[in-house]
Image: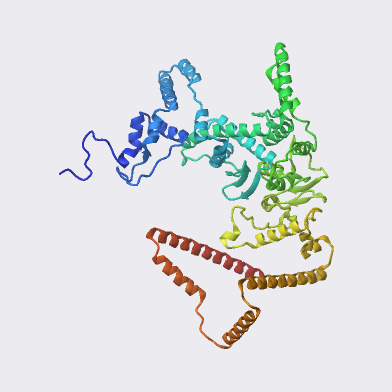
Length: 607
């Protein structure tokens, strides 16, 4: 008798053995190396699977057989094979010390594009936006690496990542799509809302980065290769949605001064003010000019580019960026309430950045909320001596010279104002003081069960800011009947408001009593019966007050009900219920620890 799992030779596979294949067998099936197989899987979005029964052991990596079959018919596989064969020819030429042949082969290296893969993996633009979190984090990470020749990462890849990240930030800032920011040990978290999709990414701090040997950069560079193409397509689509030509043409003077982000702001603001018809007419006139200028042999390509820059970019004068942003925002009619709040948070406010603060982060955040920003150096919109500057962002204990017409605040003030959506008092963020705790906007305090003290203060400030808004003339009379609104408007004083509130409460009680009597009359209950029931209830309550009887606590009854309900649950549901109880208990313990720390901190301050 054959064994239980015996399969005769030549018989078709069944079950997991037919659905899944190990990585070693997959590489042999595709006739590729392990590095090429990894690259194919990353570019195609194929990941390992975990079958219910690992038929060849737990130490193996399994893939779906359908995915491997699709890879066998992938056109990119042939191009990778040609590239590998070409690299072998280069290696052989270098071994033979034939430098001319090696250089000629390197210049003719076969290339491939990932455009078709982007379309396959993301059929719609919303699908691409949903998968943009890791893409933006990876691109911003490589954009912060040192661009040094001879390292494991090419300099042009780092410059390309920097360009893509600045283009994305310029679009987010122009459309006022930024919603949340948070400074952590890892870096700065951002969350933007683009076409209804919330996109969160992480940017590292502006520090000197060191490439370690613990990271496999080949895997990361393969991911980066795909993400560069994806972000390029996304930026192209987003720039076209606001009628801006892509890729942008930057001012070479600002680019040389390492102010690419500011140059992009100017380009986007200028391009978005034009209408599509004007863009077409300008494009047609530029084509005619180009054709006429090409006839002249004395004009080179750089002169043409400078002519386009002079035509597209405004003069670099004080207040030019603010005027551009105002002009570009005049035609935004179909915007939601969040965008309006973000657009007007820092409206008509000028900021100046000292050289010790994180310039790129603040240069991205402040214009996204309607402010105008400048910094120390050449090519800035306005100088430090401008009298219209409202806030100067500094991060050192002492200042050499101070202007009495502005506030000197720490960088955390900008982030906290953005998260609170109000202009917070600058007294707690002054130079040399310990700022308040930086609260994360990604944490729901009500769901966690603990509200920090500063969060309560911010809520009070938000409520005060909302009450200070005067009611519009076309509002209903119900808002004017509220005593709090009348106090805010200055119609009555505090004592009159208290009297009005008391009268209003009495009227509400009488109205409720009237409705209750109507309901009892409809149900057939007489007035005498209700009086007798009230008397019996009052007498019963008095007796209970005089007697000292043992009352069963509510928590014990609830526990008994939960225990009885557990008896009728299945094992799976019972396990889920116990896991939920454990998580809730952990949350309560965490809240208890935080409250105890708060009590000890208050006791130490008072003592």
